Structures are given as structure tokens and as C-alpha cells.
Image (cartoon, rainbow, N blue to C red):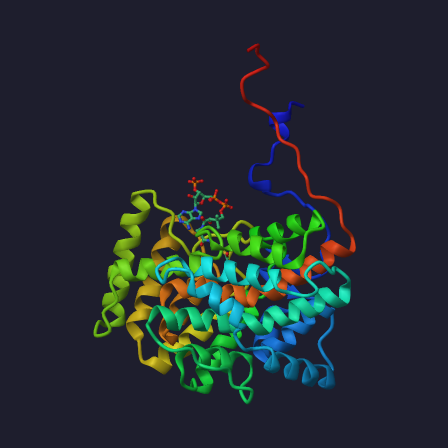
Length: 379
Ligand code: ACO
């Protein structure tokens, strides 16, 4: 066999290592976090509980949850050094650059930065979980010329995230839809960003470096950046609040037909692992439906249905999680560029769980390449 025949472009179909964090089964469209179906967690558990499940392997006891909840609430404030670093960045840079910089600054200032003991790593993961929402909220507000809003300890993670971003208490159904999105975005095995985190960890580098690298991988539109790209599609088609659901669907359908005829890739559809639909979509779509009802925006459902139906008819390609998540965040009031940083906040849990796992049974990740350049020659 030649080296060329062995190449697995994009590592497609390659099993790289074991993981006990989550199990994706594309045949049954199921996703388990530590054995629990993700839709059951989304229906019944707080994001804080899911974070502890991913890190520890078990759901927390009531006292473990109380203790973590108090820790999380006490560690939410934006570190002045992080704020100072963000203030050096232009307000028109991509917010993913802000998130990436923030994690890097947090790491550079961390007294335990180079301590990779399990206790120190868990502490750093918990701190990052607690601290990152303030980065997203601050960045969203500074882009709008608004003053930062201090966190509120009487609110849970999701309610406080929305509070710090918008400066007003969100309705309970909005908080719940946000919580659902965080649970669904938390973890998804060896996706590109998680794999990046594991590659960095495999060199025995530190946790914040691994998360910073993962953010870089998440930014791209073939991965996390797709939730933002979905909204660009909706905007390109045109959102008209007065339009009927049926008319919006017709326009969306015709946009999709033109896009596919032009051989465009439409973000929010397709998946490397799931070929019959993303296991997370029904739960996120139900949350989107609740937001559409809450905000009375049925034209958004028309756009959603029109694109989905046309893609299904033409190529039988199904939506992925980013497809319902994008419009959900739009309805909540987030600027489009902020969608992927929200994904960071959720995926910090999955990334750090994989960092722990990689650290515990490490092997340097260093694949081979097949050289196809100029053969050896003389100067
Ligand atoms: N729009 C149009 N056609 C598509 C799409 C799409 N979104 N996705 C796949 N296809 C087509 C490809 O054009 C290709 O067709 P061809 O065989 O006629 O050339 C075929 O389906 C296979 O596509 P690949 O890109 O080779 O499949 P792969 O497994 O590498 O792709 C990926 C997976 C990258 C996610 C792809 O579906 C895509 O680019 N989707 C859009 C980006 C996106 O939504 N990413 C989010 C991923 S989920 C997440 O991060 C939460």
C-alpha cells in the first residue's frame, strides 16, 4: 500500500482515542453525556449540573451542586486585567478574537497556570466556566457603546448571563431556552475544537493554551462559526417582521434553490458524523419554537422551514445544531457575531473534560504526512 492510499483526508472515519466523556451514535441519532441522553439533561438539569457531570463523570449531589453554585456566583466578575486587554482590541474585530484573547490573558495571570495536577486543572476549568460569560457580555455591550453590567449573585448561570448582556432580567422562558442551548452545545466528542484542545494538551502544554487554541478552531464557519453564518443567511434572504410565515417560507425556499444551483455550501446544514440528522436539533428546535411564540415572530419559522424543506428536497441534508441555535440567539437580542462566543461559554465544559482525559492517559498526538513535493535536488 502506498502512503497516498493510507491518507484519511480530514481524519474522516479515523478513531483516534477512547473517550468516556460523551458518546455520539449517528445510527440512532443519539448523544450521551457520561451515559445520559442529552435531551433528558436538557429537559431536566441546569447547565451547572451538566458541567459537573462532564467534569466528574457523575451528576452532583445536592450539596456538591450548592457548593459549586456558590463558587460560580463568586467568580463571575470581569477581571480588570481581562477588561484592560479587551479594551485594547477594536470594537470591530471578531468577538471570537476577544474570547480567544481573554482566555489567554486569564491563563497568563493565573497563579496555577503551569500546575497540571487534577485538582488545579479542575479549579481552572471551574473558574473559566464562571468567568467567561462576563467576557461575552462586556464585549457585546462595548460594541453597542453601553456600560458594563455587574453580575448578580441571586441569578443562576443562564439568567445572569442574559442579565449581564442586556442589563434587564430575561423572562423565565427565555432563560430556559438559553439554558437548553448551553446544555446542547456543551460537548460533542472529538470535534475539531476539542481535538485541537487535546492536541495541545498532548504536548503537556497548559489548560488555558489548550482552550485558547480550541477557540481558534471553533471560530471557523465549518464548525462553531456556522451559528453566526446561519443568521447571515436569514439576513441575506431578508427578515420582514410583517411577512406571513407562508410567504417567508416561499422566499427562503427559492433562495435555497438558487444557492444550491450555484453549488454554495449553506451553513447550518450537514455534519461530519450525523448523516441522518443531528441528535441535538429536535430539542433546540423546540426551544426555538418557544422563542418564536414568546416574541411573536412567525416569519422566522417560515424562513427556517423554507430553507430546511428545500435542502431536504434537493440534497436530503439535515440541519445541525447551529441551524436552530442561530435564530434563537437572534430573537433573544444577541448581535449575530456574538453567537459563537456563546458557544465557547458552553463548550468550555466539554473542552476541559477532554483536557483532563487527555492528561490522564496522554500520548503525544503527532500524525505522519506523505510528502508530495519536489524530490531531493542539488543546490
Ligand atoms: N450545504 C450544501 N451542500 C452540503 C452541505 C451544506 N451545508 N454539507 C454537505 N454538503 C454536500 C457537499 O457539497 C458534498 O457534496 P458533493 O459530494 O456533491 O460534493 C457532500 O454534501 C458531502 O459534504 P462534505 O463537506 O464533504 O462532508 P463533510 O462530512 O466533510 O462535511 C460539514 C461536514 C463540514 C459540517 C459540512 O456539512 C458543511 O460544510 N456544513 C456547513 C457548515 C456547518 O454547518 N458546520 C456546523 C457543523 S455542526 C457544529 O459545529 C455544531
